[in-house]
Amino acid sequence: MNLEVNLSGLKLKNPFMPASGTFAYGVELLDHKNEVDITEFGAIVTKGISLNERFGNPPERIAEVPCGLLNSIGLENIGLERFIKEKWPLLKKIGVPVIVNIFAEKEDEFEVLSEELNKAKVHALEVNLSCPNVDRGGMEFGQDKKVAGRIVGIVKSRFREGPVFVKLAPNFVNIIDVAKECEKNGADGLSLINTIMGMAIDVEKREFLIPRGVAGLSGPAIHPIALYIVYKVYQEVNIPIIGVGGVYDYRTALEFLMVGAKAVQVGSMIFVEPGIINKIIRDTKDFMRRHKIDDIKKIIGSMQVIKKGEREK
Amino acid sequence: MLSREIFLKKIEGEILNNIDLGEGMFHLVVSAQELARRVKPGQFVNIKILDSLYPFIRRPYSVWSAEDDVVEFLIKVSGLGSKLLSERKRGKIDLLGPLGRAFPEPTFDGKIVLIGGGTGIAPLMFYVRYYNLNDFKLIYGSKTFPPDYLVSRLGEIKGDFLISTEDGSYGFKGLVVDYVKVLIKEGYIDPQKSIFIICGPLAMLKSFQFLPPENTYVSMEGRMACGFGVCMGCAVKRRKEGGYLRTCTDGPLFRFSDIEL
Image (cartoon, rainbow over all chains, first blue to last red; front, side, top):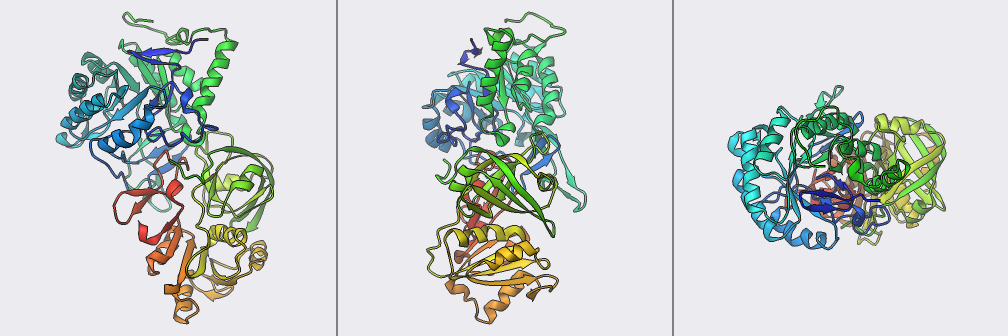
């Protein structure tokens, strides 16, 4: 049985990996192999790394909503230098491809991040374009397709060790246009989707559940939305798509593959079931056995109603 | 890296008993051998309320007692999760833990003063029992006269036990913080020669900031998504260096001098 997939040169033994921000730096649970066996993962995706350390937002940072989670962590991270010094040496020893998620508040910070992570020889990058762009009054990079394309160009020209994936959010933007622009500027793949902006209020106290008001919605509640976006974008681009959003079992993971994603990230469900990725790998193998599918590639893109253009299988 | 005390493991427990104690509190008793043997006072268990997508995330509850194969929890109904949990009378229950760092061993240079508010009394009772303490003061702050069962359990405690109720139905009338201030004034507690461990709601913890910060520990209970250090949700402001600590892996117990509330 073959579960291997190839994401623009990044070879994965299976398509399943954690979503950025739900698995810390990827090394915290190495001692807990009984519950989470990271060596079985298709890849590891780190939490977002910025040029400088960020403390993140004050509490409360988490609130539950029906079948989902609002979070406002504020991209807390230890910064590029400490990441390379403290986390990368442990990560590269695991023997699983490592995708480092990066974000910045200014365009030139993307230059340094890409250059330094190229020098460190990390295996791949995932560029988070959902951070507010300080130079443009706080508008997210990914909300302007020209800016998004330019960032992709900046990162691609400096990071040559492996593929560059771009993670996009569906907030106030035509995600298909942005996706196409990223492809045009050399992106090697797309991670779809980042959290959806949302909010919730405690009406008795007349307080936002998250003090900042706005937060990122994740969890099973967003899965059908993410699935439809992957389905739509798959018809418009020729680069691999990593499906992400509300996966909670092998069925929801396989849905992404069926509409065209080549890989799948599991996010919030890790908080509930730390061993969920291992379980999804096991259950997918069982599914393939039951359905007599010898190669997972036969599942990818198998549920398409309309399909535009040529596409490599 | 996680603390060595944290044992990330899903354990299937069996609900033995789940009793409404009154005053919005319930007493959950589960059979879970591995958990009972590993858990130390101050640690918590992340409980999956139902095998469903809503409630989605687990709920963290600190342990009231662990003996032989049995783990007990004292829980207040405060939202959807605890409400649904209070209604689960039997069957399997999905537990993750023990999580968090245990309270420090009671080898302090000073008298131990334990202050609990509401169900915050639970880990303190586990603490004195686990270490078989008899030389300590335990002050319990309650809204009203506590449920009979809780009173009987409190009666088993060997050290000095004092109580305040907000409505004056038993003991000192008023907030526990005001009671502690009186006890200090009367010379019953010498704050300079005491170690304080305080568990209760955030507002109560905040009210004790007059105590010597080096000698005062508080147990935090901020919202968290995972409980094992990967979501970064349960932030507690660090006092000196800036930035945040995490309730789940750095706490839940913090020294006042290390954090800002």
